[in-house]
Each structure stands twice: as structure tokens, then as C-alpha cells.
Amino acid sequence: MEYDSMPLLNAFIKETLRFYPAAPYLERVAGEDLVIPLESEITMTSGERISHLPVKKGQFIAVAIAAYQRRVRLEALWGADADQFKPSRWLEDDPCKGKALGPYAHLASFSGGYRVCAGWRFALSEMQIILAELVLNFSFALSKNDPVRPLYAGILVPITEKGVKGLPLFIERISE
Ligand code: HEM
Image (cartoon, rainbow, N blue to C red):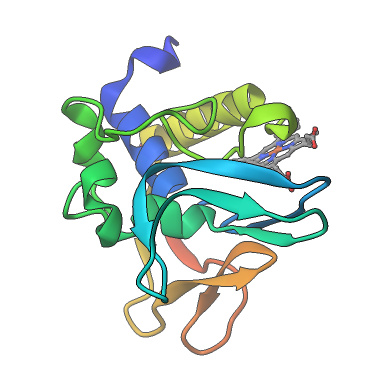
């Protein structure tokens, strides 16, 4: 099957990677003094407007991937509905109006740069193949009594409101 040419499948995968990045947050420590150029000016808590961010050697840097991909304040980047799970955004023009940070769909979910995820293309093929086969053959439903939410535990994992770890599903075969 030509998985890359399946628009709905790929829109769903992209939106899942955007909205639920498996690694929502990465940490770095600056190896040297550096100045990070910003795409647009920001206002500091002091009121000062800056277009470059000075970083000192040894300074801790939190890379907020999930916030970058969801924040409505980045409206110019992802659109005013960035805080909604909406696969159809990927069926229109490229929904990200900024520079690509990572290797796939402008997302930072596979990180980027020198330490980009070495398995991102393999991971994408896995998702396409497994998802396409599953939805062709089975139907899935969530429990209405115990809704599932994402939990940050180093990586993003599913947990139910009642505290069951994992993703309990009702599954039915829909074809022979
Ligand atoms: C949806 C699935 C995946 C996601 C979202 C993902 C995401 C990431 C992220 C965010 C990093 C950067 C971690 C950091 O710098 O602290 C990373 C690194 C890495 N990933 Fe993945 N990954 C996925 C699947 C895979 C698979 C299937 C493989 C191998 C077959 C793989 C191999 C690696 C390796 C080797 C690195 C380290 C690269 C380096 O530091 O030079 N990943 N991944």
C-alpha cells in the first residue's frame, strides 16, 4: 500500500504527533555562551522587548515541545484553534506558518537539528502501517465511564480518570 498518499491517515498521524507529542518536553544545558535569535520579538517580565536571547554556558534550557505545538498565543504559527485536536487542519494548506523545526510536518515531536530522532522515518512507517491495518479490520471505542487523559511521565502516557494506567478500549472485528 502507498501509505504516504492516504490523506486522512496522514492527517490523523500528524495531528496526533502535534497534539500529543510522545516527548512533550526536552532538557538541554548550554555547552558555551550563545545568543539565540528569536523569530519575533518578545516582551520580558521587566517590560523589555528582545529579539535575541542571551544564554550563558551551563544554563539549563527547557525545550517545551508540547507548548510550542499547542499554544494559542502562537496563533500566527498554528492558527487560533491550536488548542483543539483537529486532523482536518492538515488537509488544507500547510497549517504551520513558521520555519520547520523538525524533519516532519513542521513539528518538533521528533526534535530537530544534530540530535534529531534517528528513527523518525521508521516510526512514521510503523504508525502508518499499524494504524491502517487496525482501522480496516477493527472498530474501537473508549469507555464512557472512565475517560482517558494524557499524563506526563517523562514521556506522554495514557491514564484513566480512575487511575488505570494504559488505554482500555472496546474492540470489535469489522471484517473477516
Ligand atoms: C513516534 C515515535 C517517536 C517519537 C515521537 C520520537 C521522538 C524522539 C525525540 C523527541 C528525540 C530527541 C530526544 C532528546 O534529544 O532528548 C528522539 C531521539 C532518538 N530517537 Fe526517537 N522517537 C520515536 C521513535 C523512534 C524509533 C522507532 C527509533 C528507532 C528505531 C528512534 C530512535 C531514536 C534515537 C536513536 C534517538 C537519539 C538520537 C540522538 O541523540 O542522536 N526513535 N526521538
